[in-house]
Amino acid sequence: MFIESIHSVINAHPWLLLVTFFVLVAVIVVVSLFCRASRKKEIEKFAGRYGWKFSVDYKTPEELFKQTGFSFFNKEENRCAENFVTGMENSYSKVIYFDYSYETYDGSRENESERYYRYFFSCALVTLNEGELPSFRLEPETILTRMAEKTAGLQDIDFDDFPDFSDNYRLEGEDEELVRKFFNRTVLESFERQKGLDVYAKGRQMLVVKQRVGTIRIYPFLENVRDIASTLGAEIKKFRP
Image 1: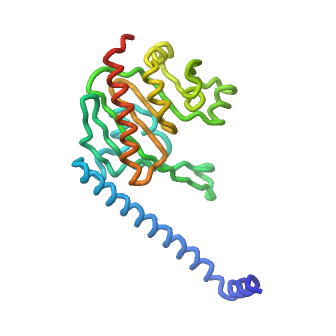
Image 2: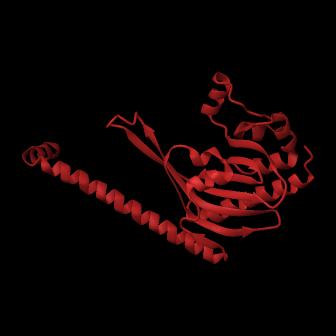
Image 3: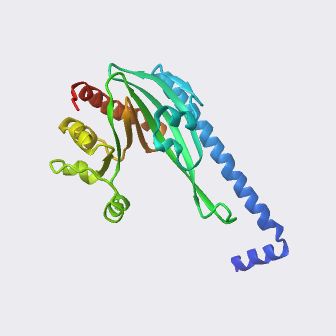
């Protein structure tokens, strides 16, 4: 009876359906803008609490790509980098935190019914004070990456003595021998302690990416990143290619 009544109202006033649609879209937009502004305010407070610097738009995705060469900053569309926290330094490295997002499309660009999805990340860009890292990419091992390894020959550098690392991460590098040599016990155990990280590294720079964390989880995320950076910074001083 209730559903029939709704159908009757819509049939009598078809414009109500259109109005309802636009109201829902407006509510979604307002909520999204509110959440974005609230997150910006919380991260600004977080930075001030530790004496770090906050900037909404410290660098654009294009500038980050030009600076690092990491493909992460040059893929997908409508990329956005914001809420930068700078000033985190120790004897091994400098770390910059920021929020990042981009859109992916489902369907062709000419298809009017195409859908898009926005993905959100928490990122930490590390610059080592000295030494250079071998070029490598580390990402969580998934069913899809395992399938790609078997069907498309996707590279995965495994370590027989560290099954936990090899089961949880896919590692690739331009120079496999060099990467294997750098990933000694200390480095492997450091990454074993951290799960779900996506890492790009080359020269003195390393980018650590994670699905966006809540503001109360930013500090623990940065502590994990700085732990890894300190380990790599210490190991790179001893590393002899």
